[in-house]
Image 1 (spheres, one colour):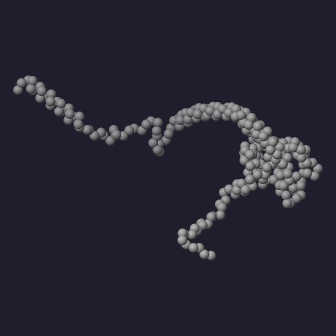
Image 2 (image 1 turned 90 degrees about the horizontal axis):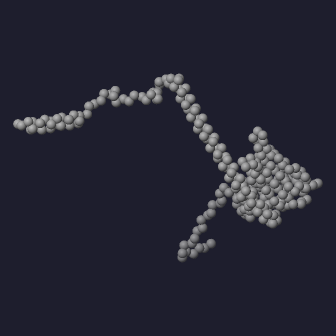
Image 3 (image 1 turned 135 degrees about the vertical axis):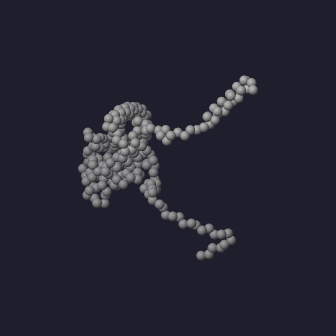
Length: 274
C-alpha cells in the first residue's frame, strides 16, 4: 500500500471519530441543571436583611414621588385647558342664551307655563303660585366662577299684585369651609298677599313655592335648584310645549301598563252568534 493510500484512510478514520464524538450527549449532573436564585429575589421563609428592605423602600418612595409630581403637573395642565374651554364656549353660549331670552319675552306666560308643565316642579306649586308665576317675564341661571362653584338664579317679574320686587334671586355657592350655602332676596309682599302666610292658614293649599326663597336648609330646597339648573334652564321649550297628557305619561315612566288581551279573529266561513 502506498503512502498516499494510507494517508487517505487515516483522514477518513479521524472524520468518523469526530462525527461519533459530536453525536454523543453527556448527561449533566443534577447540580448543574439547577439555576442559582437571582440575588435580588429571596426564597420563601428566608429573612430579608434590614438594609435591603430599607434600600428598596427608599427607592420606591423616590419613584413614587416622581410619579406623583408628574400626575400633579398633568392635573394642573388639564385644569387650565378646562378653564380655557369653559371661557371660550361660555361666550359662545351667552350669545344664544341672550337671544333666547329676547324671544321668550315675546311669548306671554312662557315661563309660568313651563314651570306648571314640568312633572317635578309642578308638584311644588299651589294654585296661587301658578297665578304669581304668570307674571314671570324672564329667568336666568348664572354660573359663579369658571369652575362652576355655584349658581345664581334670577326671576324677573312684571308688575303684579303680590309683591314689589322686580327681581328675586336665589344663590347657591361654597362657604369658607367648603359646605354649600344659599342666600336669597327677601320678598317684599304687599299687604294681604304673603303667600307663605296664606298657605299656612289654608289647609287645602300646599306650601307655597315662594317659601323656597327663604328656605336655606332642607333637601327639598336643593331639589328645586337642581331641577331648574339641570332640566328647566337648559331646554325650557320642551316643557312649555309639553301637553297635559305627556306630563302624565312622563310621571308614569317605569310603571308597567295593563296587558293587552289578544283579539280573536273569526275564521273564514264561520258565523259568530251571540
